[in-house]
Image 1 (tube, rainbow, N blue to C red):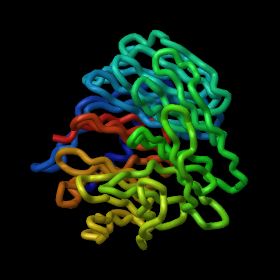
Image 2 (cartoon, helix red, strand yellow):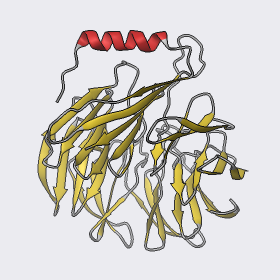
Image 3 (cartoon, one colour):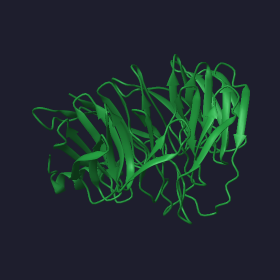
Image 4 (tube, rainbow, N blue to C red):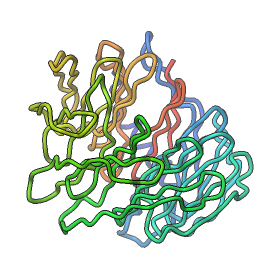
Length: 373
């Protein structure tokens, strides 16, 4: 773990502030952190979206990467593609609205949607438009692909199935959510055995038939009176389904009908599947490992909730809600830590990895590309 010099941080931010008139600022060549695991900042960019004094633009979208490009958007409505190796901007396109979820890449195309309900498909190499459609409500989740279909969760609690090539509507399902006190998040759909499993803001987990959107089962998970949202993607582990809602514990469900099999006394804010285990980040800053219905690890990482976990070959990349980034080795030992440097800069959106690269897009529109060596 590195302890950063306070004076160096102050001088760095003075320098960044002096460059605020630039639309983008690029910094190359990161630094090595640990002899066994090196976390290198390949490049970073700072976006300065126009805003009124006192009203900082807050980004809730993510950047995504593949072999060649890093795709991101800013709070001025531009969707951008960067060269992964150099950070050079390859192209930029205006969007009707702002992105509030991560873009998705498949084949030679990139897909993204905005809070105004516009959904785009473009060529990755030059940004040329494949199609653009209006879905009538903001797109809340990244696009999920399966056998030539696209699945989206909209802000009005609607699930959409589209043709991947044309954007033609195949089916739609609208959920009636009676609650007025919701987080206004959304669950990204999970594809499993020709079913679409997804949570809603009324506290129900549901399963749909992929072909025609027929509801196969639904199960009430969250039992609180307020903030019952299921805004997380379910995980299949073994013969069970795992899920949690905003303010409740982790549940283990029957895959075939959603019946609750077990409840675990842990309050997750993030989780991932790793082999036969679940790695869980809690609302209280602990990292826990669940295997065979037993907790094998309970380690304090932060005083804030751990809201994102990525598994890479050499370990785990974590973020917390207080603006820190972490890298742990495969034995869960902390080997690197970085503060994003601003009391208003945190990680509201998920980082994305590709191979040993990780893209992080902070709430203050700072884009970082790291390589784990």
